Image 1: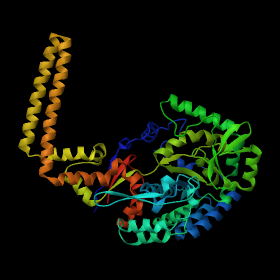
Image 2: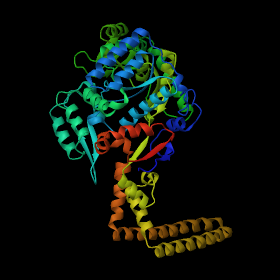
Image 3: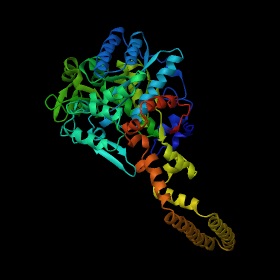
Image 4: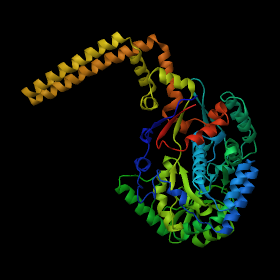
Length: 536
């Protein structure tokens, strides 16, 4: 039986913004940026009204797409629940190679669990995964990282398409066979790898391959997958896109004021906004490139080298709405104009975005969608758990220390007890004598006391150096200690990054099978509001 999970404060996550930490750790809303705290269940009562006609159009899109993704029966049962008036817990991500990083699973699992909990409480909800297929950041999508026993391997797909094209529509070429061949040497053989071979094949798009893989992973849990890049979806959200054109001055002024407030509160903005900024991208009619629309003057816009009038953009919106797409700040508003969203499940960066997007929600939709943090976790395999227990270490030790520092700690702990006692006695005696001596010299003369402090500091440094020499000698005698430190770092904090952000989800799925999805959904209840260590 697996060990019970460990719960750590969310602040152990490196490089987290203060805004996200304040939101995640406080039980009261961080107003005006977030309408509720992550501890509140009030989101279950939040309503994101869409008209009966729009809902029916949405259902037709969902049914057609999920049939294409060969979704399970429970997905279509959830679409039927939407038809009866259920609301949605939504999450999403850019489509990526071979299923993307581990946090992809965490997002989907959290949306599924939250929808289940709301339904159990008498408020019918379904989980929806929004594919960010219109993003054009190919550098985030064209690679995946898998570990081997002693190192990381990053598999990168060679893509010859225009770098500004939306990633979702890019076709996989013959090079995907090479990537799968490399993956075959790193992943356990079985159903997961066979699914990757089936979905990620020459001629498939990034969007379709990612969607079909995600649908299969959560086939038994009813996760609805949506690609909103189509003309039909853009037509449903056309009013949001229209206001981004016609009310741009007002919306940008509100964002600039919000940025000032964030700065005044000691926070920083995720997206830089200026009076020339825009909230939309435009697909170039000739090249298909996704270009940012920038304000050039009153009623004038520029995308690349071309200039567009407001009337021209509104004409495109009427006849080719799929050519206009929202930027990172407008995307959640666009999403929630289409979907009956009660809550959005996001990662740390997405949640920070919401502090800016909130002003767009209020001015365009007249409401703000609550945002909930996704499951944040490190998966700990049995062999790694044994090493942690053997050396009495925790996940926080591995995150806080570089591998070489961790190795020194293991060496120090492995020293014979008599050596430890001698070093401790010498260190304590030295510290006591130095403290007494520097206090005396300071009483004689303040300047003499400062010089004594400097000299004492150097002596304490040399004492610590003796401790490190002893630990390093032990490391040389016991080579397994260094191997243990390296193994812990590779498994739990690979290359100085959180496991969830670097390691491909397919690696864990191939090792632990379909039961992994259920396990993550179980842990996504978030009785631990911070970061979990989940023992497999």
